[in-house]
Image 1 (cartoon, rainbow, N blue to C red):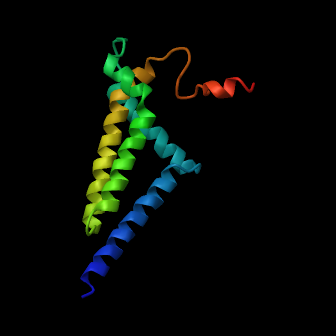
Image 2 (tube, rainbow, N blue to C red; image 1 turned 30 degrees about the vertical axis):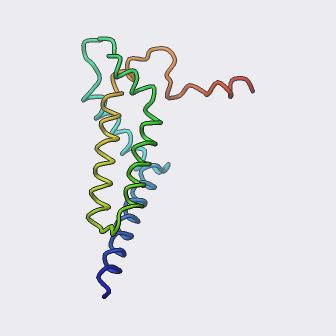
Length: 134
């Protein structure tokens, strides 16, 4: 009788832990900044071309559209969880792991194009409408 309720509570607990981890990692604490910096260095070590080659067109495209790709991946994961008939903790963990792997693939593919920028870095470049106000 209470099995669906227990399963749902486990799913809510796992989702709360995931949200807490994401909140921590996106925060401004010194340890969160250190973790993000270590991850960025690891990705650079994996994917920055050592021979100075130009990025492939797919790398440039993924780098240019990496924020919409991130939003799309997260939206698909959230939609999957919302419309899953009876989500359990295992379902939440699997959906989160698939989303993290997809986000990691986007970052790995985009990394050579991001690192090849010498002049204007589009990660820190202001939006065009902000330039008009200055």
